Amino acid sequence: MGIEVKNITKQFGSFYALNDVSLCIQSGELFALLGPSGSGKTTLLRIIAGLEEPSGSSGEILFAGENVEAQRVGDRGVGFVFQHYALFRHMTVFDNIAFGLRIRPRRSRPGKAVIREKVMELLHLIQLDNLADRYPHQLSGGQRQRVALARALAVEPKVLLLDEPFGALDAKVRQELRSWLRRLHDEVHLTSVFVTHDQDEALELADRVAVMNAGRIEQVGTPDEVFHNPATEFVMHFLGSVNQFHGRLEKGKLQIGTYEYEYDWDAFSSVKIEDDLASIFVRPHDLALSLFPEDGSSSIRANVVKIHSAGARVRVEMQTAETQDVLVAEISHQEYRDLHLEHGENIFVTPRNLRVFGSSSLTNSDSQSFRPRKAK
Image (cartoon, rainbow, N blue to C red; front, side, top):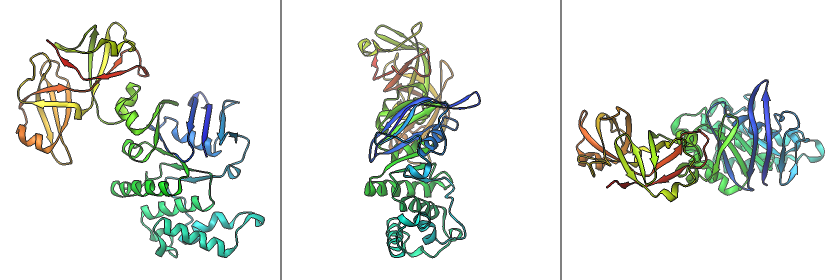
């Protein structure tokens, strides 16, 4: 079942938690609301669920084309999973999952045998078949969250809403549950919306992501689209580490300090630039390092400040010789061994896949990326 949000605004006093937000979530999609604290993502989720109301007469919430704003929470057919499980401590795992079925009105309440069969199916689905008689305090955090998810699924909701579902868990368990939730979603194909501030979580799990900031949606797209083609400076900054330069655009040339790069001017015809100034960004993995300059005018001289070699890739922190800017590069362990890098060593840095934004606004959606050609 698809969900459509139209022009929703939510105010708390003079503070706009949501400011004219519109969004379309496709049927059967696993959709992420991603953003920092205070961006409005949880407020939007609660409005979809019916736990909060939009301010004034703003906007509409539609489920499969039907406006559900006048419907109570219990009538919307929503399953909700909270960050801190919200399990009943005095009930067993079985009874927690069965709870929503047992409290239905008598005319729609399933029989005991049907409830038992449904709960056992869900226990198998969440891979906790042998823990039906345990109490929440006897479970790990990851197991409790799976029980909370099974309880939400027991009532056969039309949509599943998850508010920071793995936020209270440690890193290893979070990683395990991400993979598990993705596999589960691929089995049940239920329209699901989850809130997270964890970029890796959103990019790994979701079919599509809405990046939120200050009550607005900055960009909606697939994980590949929002990461590799960020629409705004905020999205570029928020989705992973980034190096930033301040430069100047002239027809045919991009200048960073005394370093010049040629580029295809036609590709930049839509970028809004004020006084030719631009913000230039490059990801750490798009900085190429060498012991000798590729070209005297296109490789930036820098000094190695710190090396972090523990992990899947090696992080090299550097300071540019001309402007004293701090840059961070990520290289493979093989590259690190080939370069024989040491603290204090001079190195040459060549940026690849630069992304340029006009300097006028953090929400300029007309950015461009390019591979610079060496200046002649």
